[in-house]
Amino acid sequence: MNTEQFLEIFKEINSAVLIEIGVVIALAMAIIWCSQKLLPLLAEHLHGKQRLFVLALIPTVRVLVFVFAIIWIVPLIIEPTARNMVAILGAAGLAIGFALKDYVSSIIAGVVAVYEVPYRPGDWISVDGTYGEVKHIGMRAVEIVTPDDTVVFIPHLKLWSNLIHNANNGGPSLMCVVDFYLHPEHDANQVKHLLEDVALTSPYVQLAKPIVVVANEEPWGTRYRLKAYPIDPRQQFQFMTDLTARGKTCLRALPVNFAQLSPEHAVQPAPY
Amino acid sequence: MAKGNHWQLIPLDTFERPTAPASTLLQKAWLRAQNLIGIKDDEDTTPDEQDFPHYREFDLEPAVAAVEQAWEAAESEPCVRFVISPPFSGSGAILRAWADKHGYQQLKPPRKDQLESADTASWWQAQQCDNWLLDEFSSFWLRTTSHMQFMRALLPRLLRGELGAGVVVVDSWTFAFLQRAWPLSLPHCYCFAAATPELLQQVGIETTDKALRKLNAKARGNVGVALALWALAQNSERQTPRIPSEADDATAFILCALLLHHGLAGEYLQLVLPMLAPDQLDVQLLRLQQNGVIELDDEKVWRVTVYAYVDVRDFLASRGYWLDSF
Image (tube, rainbow over all chains, first blue to last red; front, side, top):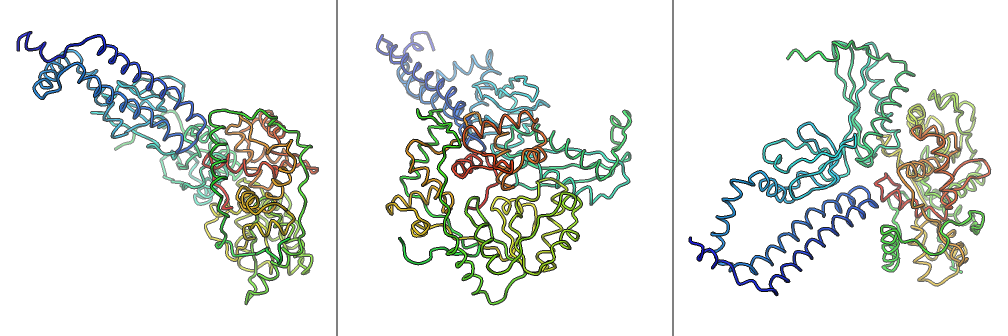
């Protein structure tokens, strides 16, 4: 394809077309900007499922507006015939393959993420060992905030090859697990019932969800895992603190002795 | 005045809430939208609690007659009956009047040491009666691990008939919690049927039929709440108290605890919410009191006000709390 043939793909662009393109781009950016500002504000006043639904609308609105703007603008610039589209896509593919492979891969993964929803704003996810709440899903990356208030940008590219752990998967239910390590000499059933009551009497607990206690014996003592759900996923750390504090008080009053782990026991790997 | 007695005591599983007219639903949705976008009414929304009208108490005798009618029809008398009482419904007062009339003795609540050691035997020995009424079931215990043991020891004894024949009045919020905390569902549970416009007329609310239906829907069929909201509506200078805009998780914990225990003194509130610092708890309580959402009664017990109850319930529902069925 010579230069003349390549230029035939494009329509004649006059000032009216330029203004129309400018207006469409400005309008699309304004809608996206508004949705990214207003929907989080609205979500702040909501709780549970309603909050997560409103937050999930943000990337969906952006993709829809983006697609709509492309569909509007492309026919203004080129003749949308099959031949022209193949030529344009071929040229674009070449550029992407050489220079922008990862960037475009992340953008495509971002579109896939809107469709497959492995994470939504408000979800608690773990990627490559980094755990936090999804605050914003951008075109290229997802922005999470860790419990230590550190913002981490994770490219959507990770979606192709990494495991994405989603703790609440778009819902308000997020299981919290609190460990208690006890000296082996005690009544296990009594401890199990007590720990269930510790969760049941927590103001944070979601009563609609189950409370489970699992025990297993270790060489140094007995490990109990208390599993329960907070009313709101954002309360998970306060909930775990409450369970730990009240659990320790109740176990001491029982009385039960806590396991005394030496540092080498604490870090000793399992034999198999 | 509507003719006849419109009070009805019914099995709990047959209870149905009155449906709200479309205008009430729209009004509620509009208020919710206003709250979401932060619009506040121009008028003073932090009323002085002393200025609220005292809502008139209703005649208990027809309600007592409804209890008699419901239980006289039963073929065999069960050991223990449970009457589930939504807040401010007046069920406790009605059952106390019924108990006085029929010679049922009011049980004394267990002492703190009996609660903490789950000692139901010594508590029962001190009662010495065959027919009894336990009307403080929701307020004598705390949502703590030790008191849960007492409740788990008491409920099977009640159901086995070891404590004779009696009536237990349980707040609807306590009942909802017990349904989760104790796996066995309680038998012989009753409640008063949701109010009807005729019942509201019977207790003295005089207005149009349409207004009665709207009021009844807003009060969720609760006679006490309907009387309070109607009394409030008579005074155009006063508005229904609103949950403060600064309300957060701690506010929800406090309101839920107050409803669960039918009101709590400050020191007990601190016991069930140990994660709140005392000063934080004080700030929350004072803010809610300033907004007319809670009040401190003569016995120094904090309670949700009847005028704010509907708003408090909606607030807890919006946060995903475990609610009562009324």
